Length: 141
Image (cartoon, rainbow, N blue to C red; front, side):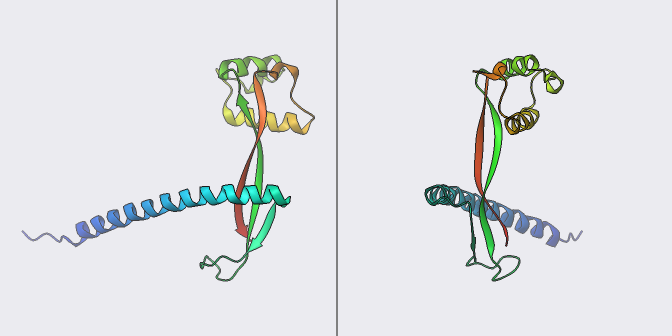
């Protein structure tokens, strides 16, 4: 019985290439994380929040500028744990987002909304605090 081994060989090749690409992506992610800290520091020190650059490597559109910019997101952080946060959210009149605990995305949406309206209610004092997540992002310019 003759069996065509070419498909099995191709699967092995694909798996090997996938593993190599994952290692490459991990290395790139580590390098990006280090560079992001440098860019964040430079942006904060200079007071800018975006810059247009032309990457040295070809992307989707060779030679096209890329906007490197800050993204900001206000999210909530539990100070005393999810249960205490749930109680504070209920006490502040927003119990509709509480199931057994406050879902992190619901909490973040509530924090964002309350901050845009002027701040957190006193029920949140010592239980939940807002903090800003700032990341460096890119998009085609």
